[in-house]
Image (cartoon, rainbow, N blue to C red; front, side, top):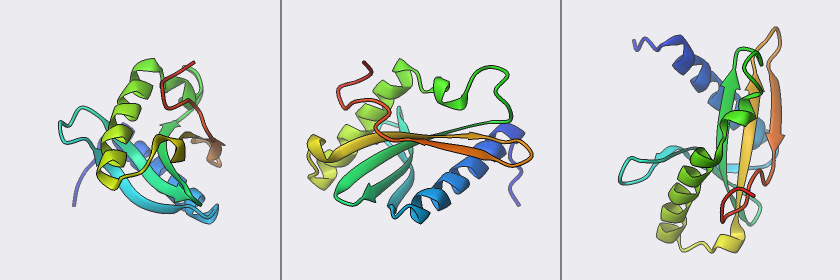
Length: 127
């Protein structure tokens, strides 16, 4: 049995919650933890929301003492997500106009609080 560090276990639990939530919203999840060939970028979840291919970053925190989870999706992280998406869509033959970037933020407390931010940032990078 694999023993995970507490932060990694919470992150995995957050991804599982986000996966179930998105499927419940009608998404078809086609990849989890997709890594670029170079290994320099990773996307937590990739799925179809109708005709749109959505790249989803999941951020989980035990509390918001150091800011909300979505605040951790900074410019650098966005650039890495866009790079990974570019590689993925090139292999699939999908056009940028059919791509969206979402963030799912999860605060674990007595009851986990999940926030889904659609179109969190543009294809060309943060505003």
